[in-house]
Image (cartoon, rainbow, N blue to C red; front, side, top):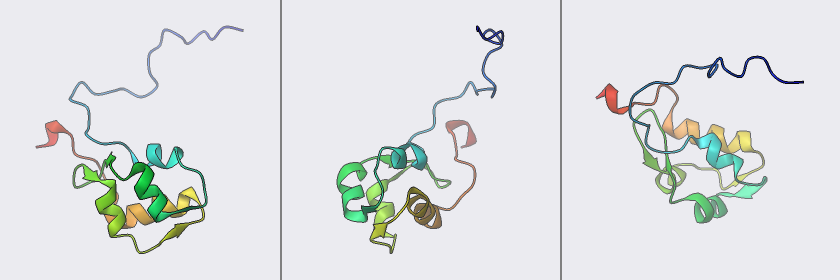
Amino acid sequence: MADDNEDEGPAVELGDGEPVDGAPIARISSRLFWPIQKSEIARREGSETIRTPDGPQQLDAVLEEVEMTYFQTEQAFTGAIRDVIGTGPVPTADDS
């Protein structure tokens, strides 16, 4: 059966500004398999830039501040990262 809502546009209105630098931490964590060691995350994804409330940061630099060395679950990893970077709105180019 065809969806009658195809022409309505996105459910969330997207802004017209510049794209935000970095990837959401959820995107990076979705590419990994759990459980995993911190060193393996650094090896695979450490060069990635992530979005934070303080602006884009290198994942390697954030991982250095995480005390855990082994993550049983994706939630444990994202929680540890958010403990370091904080939560809140991510600045855009228009926010400056």
